[in-house]
Image (cartoon, rainbow over all chains, first blue to last red; front, side):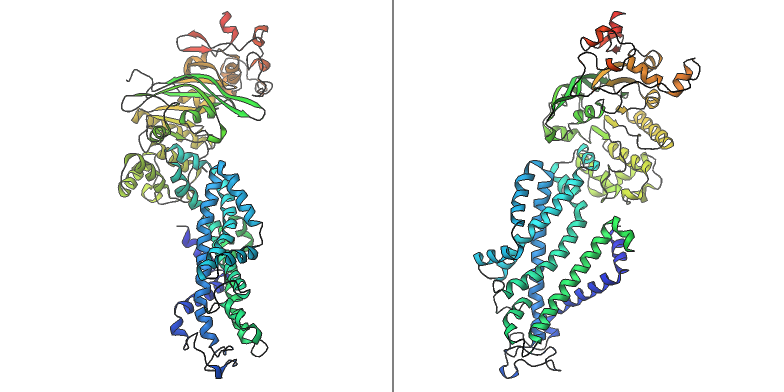
Length: 280
Length: 335
């Protein structure tokens, strides 16, 4: 089996391991939020506003006296869910687009010109425009980000499809009487898994940043939902009184995005045999 | 039915429109293959051998816009005669891998790297014989045994990259043979293998042919292989058949100057002909003419040492010299 070998190699690389452990911890925190946080993220306590970190409030409180640690742990749920849905959505859509464009040459030009057009917009601007049109909600943010990242995946998948479709085994399975749709999904798609996996990890990281950016600009998730982005956005004017209100959510964003990027790098390096030698 | 050839190809032509004009890759090719026999298609690179096989399998890419004409009458298992070139896409797909199988030149890349060998053989069986997964895998194991892969039960679960080139070609043969085809098209199956492995693969193919009675269309540029493994030979040059004969007469008395030249290129042959061993090997001078600007007459005329004035006039027809012997040369018509 190929997978265990890759997993084993991943275990040998410290940076990848550390990132994976950090990510795992964040996911566990997010999933088990009620057990890890003793406060409700939306409970206000005006008397305890803008407190420094203490035994009761690990990361202090924000301008409404809400426990920052609880908000970050609960916010992880939203931030990660948005990022995960974005990664999933754009990978599915991008893979279908890229495969079809790469395999059926007649569809290549029309599909890829649309993709080019979408890619010519600055990412965040396109997302802002889309959310502005659709209205701010969790689902619309995901939708906007999926639309932003789909073209990237489509590009990568198309390029890889163009390579794989010319390999002799495609002709060989055709000579066995396998129908085109099956060739596409059963034979070509599995050969594209490594570039697709790498894209997933990067888009996951980008999406966390993009969601934070959109929320910060006020066109993301509605402010009452605690995501790391809305937390920074809502509390930024109080940063001079208690730096924790922007520091901790900011750190959460950085640590998560960085871990994802490093993990993605590690996976990419291991899946690309040409790079392997220089890295081990 | 046993009297009828399994495949009769008549006047097969395949042309590709290119920006510089129409390229006739295969022109007016005719040959036939009897049940249980091997017909070899011999020629140098670019002579149209592979295009012929891909045309017969209907595997030319649609985007190439190939223009195909001619007939390829194939005798199916249930006794029908069908024209491979006219069959609807669905019907040809059901024949492929089932009654018509093909093995390719490059065993290194003709297997899907992400599936085990067993899964790939099983896929074809499940597709055409409608077996379930377990039965198909069991059949795959029998196929690996058949092609003499040691420790077949273990190899079944290995990936192509874990196998050597010779082993992979055996797997390709197992894959092609999985549904017991009646016609196997082997497109230079041993070219990428070293000589000892090549011999093993050829012996294996011959054994399988004897056991199953399948016909083989053997495409090669290796005359040594042809001499040992073919029953009938069609020599191709620049997309046309220049000589057709049974294997013995072809090697004994080649009629076309191109065939003569090819045989003279063989070191063993030049020596065995009773001549003193030549200091240098014979080489056919010149190069194949461009398919975009074919010479007006015989395609081989610019390279032919025996060319006469008539050669430049028009493409000579295939002239029947004796029973089942034809050559495309004006010198033979004069004789």
